[in-house]
Image 1: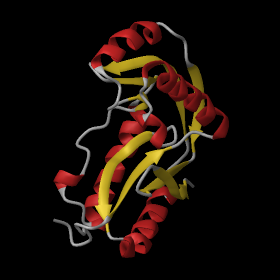
Image 2: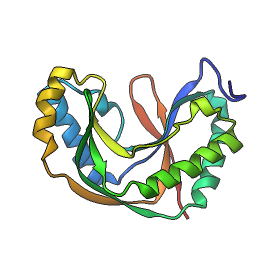
Image 3: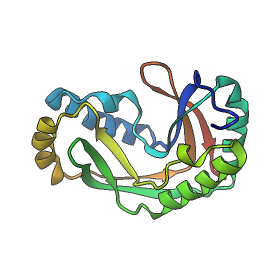
Amino acid sequence: MSQFQDIDGTLYFIALIPGGELRNRVRTVKERMKALYNAGHALKSPAHITLQMPFKRHSGDEPRMTEALRKFASEEKPFEVSLDGYGAFVPRVIYINIAEPGPVRELHSRLKAMLLSELGFTPSELMKDVQPHITVATRDLTKTAFSQAWPELRNEEFKAAFTAESIFLLKHNGKYWDIFREFNFR
């Protein structure tokens, strides 16, 4: 267990988050999934591409985490993220595809190294690999609902792009995920 981890800690995760207009478009898709298929779990977080899965830390560790993430982000360059259509992790997850995942994977790799060296993450806390995507239905999407939703969305168009100019630290408030801090790229 990491020196910063606390069993009673707060949950955090690190992500890329698109700007307001695109975030709202994704939210509309999530709301549709809830209305049509009773799958609302994805609404508990803003539209995002996960860079580091949820992890626990004591809230007293926030200053050190935020400083390390600020320094990390200040050394990164903005890059374009293109969204193109839908994908699925059968049998319960539907997501928006990232057309060119390479830059996100490279960012994840650098972030992972920093989390190990600067914040004392253990290898088991880290995401080994990242499959960049934006989830629109998960967990509470039943297998039956998936079998109805996926054929409908599979061929539906969703095209958009945004410039990744920062990473975000999200914090769980007990019910859903709040954007806690944004760290701008150089």
